[in-house]
Image (tube, rainbow, N blue to C red; front, side):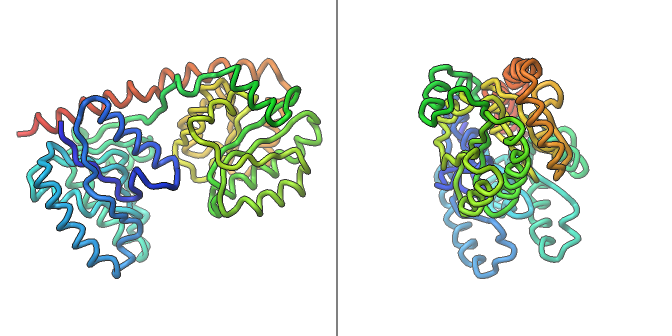
Length: 372
């Protein structure tokens, strides 16, 4: 199968890491690993394109260039990763129609609330146009599947699940020892968090976590919080951490994803509130490495974590409840071990990447070759 692949929000080879980037690149790389030939149809970013008229001439030129690339490549399918109101796919629907190839969207998102705001109306309409013209749409989250069901026929919509390669994040005793020795943490109870430290909901989540950990650090004197990640909010967060918990919070900076398993293995708990979070690969990675999770009961964490079985969730912005959950897991060894034991099995049963993407691959092959 020859696939024209397009990620309108951010090209999959973009240097700035993110959870969405990982999902898109994983899908691309999986299809290539199965022997399919993939072409990056375009690297043109469509983020907020409907509100940037100065970029429209450049978009038109990119449309012409992309059309030429597609006509030369002759794909069996156009596959768009992640179309939504901020980054609607303005290339796939038109080029696939012009060239007569099937058109699919993986991680389609639809919400009618954006049609009520004049700032988001154009993006909403452009995204709706793309969704309605798709031969098939894959929804990665329950809320997206429910919303898309309002405009997409059942036979053209699939509920799928992202995931990880469990073996890459399995517990590693050698890695755990390496990290504990490196930061002189032997004998400590470690809470690990990981996030981009951007001045948005990411930094807001870390702020809440620091405030939740502060009273715990006084009650559990051998506890420490490690925060992996970097960004413009780091300096501000470091000052807050020093003020609230002195030297009990350690900022690790950016950790390469292929080294994260060592940090997960060294920890006792994974904590990240997850304000406005999508599924969140870190929740899956942490659970795979035998870590119970502490987070808010928002959409993303609720899809990845089973409350009371693989982690403890609390209402959004209820910092006292999150603090209580951290304290409970640090002091109740039996509960912590119980949740830690169930966590890897939960991930392997529901979020095994290869199994889940094989189902997507089967559907894409049907779309490509089973069309009249």
